[in-house]
Image (cartoon, rainbow, N blue to C red; front, side):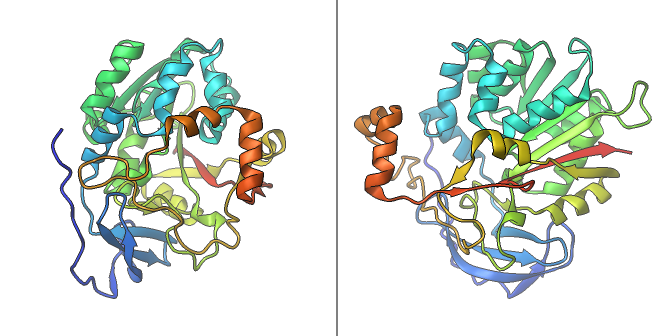
Length: 344
């Protein structure tokens, strides 16, 4: 594989810039946020008009995904192996990740005939969610800009996937889909608003025969944290946006859509969802760079650690020994922001 090019941010960014989302003035809140790839650093800006944070400089992150998929760093890489063994692949994912739990619940509540419901997943990655939807009886297609991700998905699950950019896909597939899914993807793109507008164009409007469709977007939820918190998020350029409910309302207006937010109360009651850091008190990022400049994990976990991590009693003992506090999340707002758009 080609070596990842380091950006090593040295330039001094101004105290204020134009927000790339809403165009208002955004203020510099951090000059030296560490990057996902060592030794890069990024500046973080906050726009109070749309309550959005974004990283500078804006650089492409496609090479990161080729490394992540090619070397199976992400914990998501275990899903393609495990999901084929599951009796109910969709329920398996819903139990594994809150974003899939929410998306599954929203789709079920639409009450459509499964054979007639057409679903587009944007940013399908290694393909397991698109596969699970098809196994559940839906007609789902996954698109992704990563050639290696799409190739692996097709090899593992079949011909449900295409390598495509949604901004170009939308030109040929206007109002074709009942559901458009963007699960943990929008925070990775350079231009969030045109990206969402393209997704919306693929989805049926309320004027369509049989009613309109839904666009389901999930992303880390800035609204869960104090207003003065800085980038409690994955490091840039892996994530380039930290979006809030206000961010989503602004994008809905620009996309000619209404927006509502998924109520997480039932999920929290059923799953007793906990996190290691209390979002009400967390003020800055907690992550460290993940890859070195050659694309290798800086602190890879040993095989022994991975083995014990699969044993429930070992995990409990480990938490007690390490004294890692856990904070239970309750109420309607979640760590994950799940916005549901409907085109007018």
